[in-house]
Image (cartoon, rainbow, N blue to C red; front, top):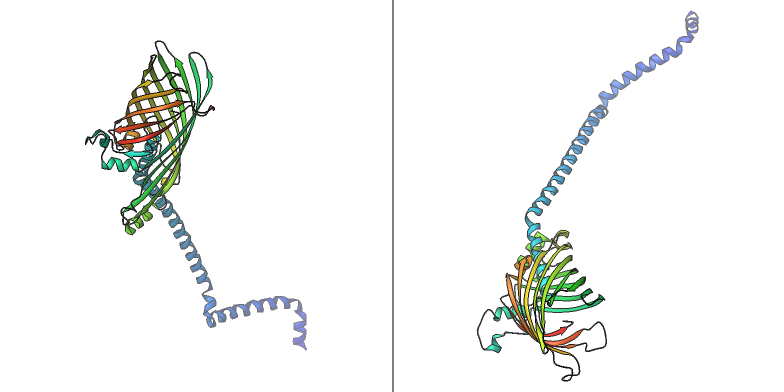
Length: 385
């Protein structure tokens, strides 16, 4: 009874005793729990290990990203320092060659190619040989110029110039040799628009100046028949070489001075003309960096012509012969593999054969090229000459 009263006297201490007992039991149980089940004891250790692993992975990823960035930068610098300049120069020469070969004023490719030595009975390599004839036969060129007079007075003339041209260079050895190392075709398509100013000077002198703008599209299709060489090109250059395409936009200022001496039967002209082109190329070739083509050509020529009277023929006709020397510079010289060459032409033109302002004249002629990589002769169809 006394004991019961004692408990009853201290009943308000029961919650504290209960809490103290619970804490004591929890500590005992925790010690027993860690001794019986050691995996729970390793929980903290594993957590620390995982944190360390995460830190290591984070550190490695950061290092890998940094190494990757440095590697890409180094590779870009390496390619830019080694491959890019060579490919830029390669494509700049392609554009410069197209600017010369597609310009009918300084280079003419006719309908039928032949060696002029067969006409003169000579054996002069300057006029042509078997190799140069093969080179001329790879060329297919078409040029269609359109000129429109904006304003004309007694001494001045303003002209709007335009034109379309196509140049295809095809080296196909499949017919002669099915196992040929390489077969290729290069296509150049060019559109031109420009302005020209002419002014009559004293004593039969004529001054002319203007600027042309060219938009050129280049496409190459190359078949490499050697599988090892083809695999090498695919590994090094991918799809950027040798089969590729790109665009070029070029500006071409020109200046010319002409001395004209007319006679009753016709007359002659002395012509000096300077042309310079500069542009920028872009597209699939060379990872979008196809270079900045640049070059110039300087033409000196003499033209002798005869115009029959209207009583002789129903329309106005012109018979002419012309000799030009073309000097080349910069990329144009490298592309044509010569510093200069000559072109001699003889032809017949019919003035205004149709009642339209788009066709000034039509004609036929013979053209001979010497001192160039494409020396030889061809028959020519003249259009707006």
